[in-house]
Image (cartoon, rainbow, N blue to C red; front, top):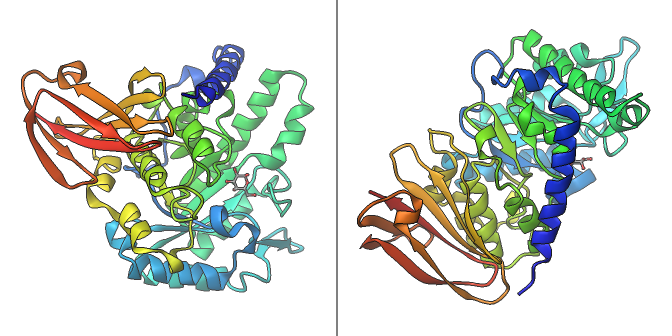
Length: 405
Ligand code: GLA
């Protein structure tokens, strides 16, 4: 049995602890733990939709976005709850003499695109950076925050992913780590205020890879969601490293403000079916945003089934908005639980080892007394009234249960 992913996770935890010791005492945000999302609460459940980056990277165009919106409807994803169609980096063109940002030749008319997407009952998202440049070295929003927010609102944008990238250089030159932290917090507050000033509800997604324990202060700078880790890739090792490293973060998520372990890789082709099932199940237990990252126009029936399983989506989107957390870890065998609004719980039996393993859960351990109703969610099968359950979990796989009193 391998313990490499656990070591990696411990490394990340170590960094987080150091960051917290450095910053927790000093930030105004840390003193105000109350969530201050935008006026009308946005993202009352974790945002669902699609984002261009994981599959298309720099090759995203207006035509591709329209085709994804079409496919989101025809595949049934919209009706399953996927609403946001999010353009990631590389849409940005030049600023004009007034400083107003324009989209580049790949996006000839952003307002027309927004109208098209809205016409399908969907919403449109966009991407920028608080630095002068984005991660892909396109135009960022530094010193143009109010102007850019107004432009987005005029176009009809509904979601902004705001990626730290270009601000990292200036942060390196700050006099102290605390000053660098403050620079980042101020930059996120600046765009929060600019978005609010437009009067348009725009979901605000912070992307700064989990630095400085962002879950402790992300809501206080207006974040409706904040990335908690570096970038995901279409590999079991990276997905598992990111997903399972979310242990302990559940207390920071809730309606209007969510931890974001990054977008989905389901359907991009490099993971096995059991691994993609683990990906979706873990993200649902984490109440994570479900932003598909594949090409929606070429999905197999299996990919559609993974992304649109109503019972799994209901776990992710449960109205109580409670993120699940790890209950036990026995080497690579982890049991996670998410409390649901009706008093039931979603339980994930995850086997991180490549070979199948037997796993057992005693429902008394998770706060139930006596026998409980148990349902295998992916199999869509009621298992009866039980006080414990033992089953074979595939390598890198999961058995997802819903347990009701
Ligand atoms: C960073 C983000 C990614 C993506 C790229 C775009 O790496 O974490 O999600 O937005 O930038 O350049």
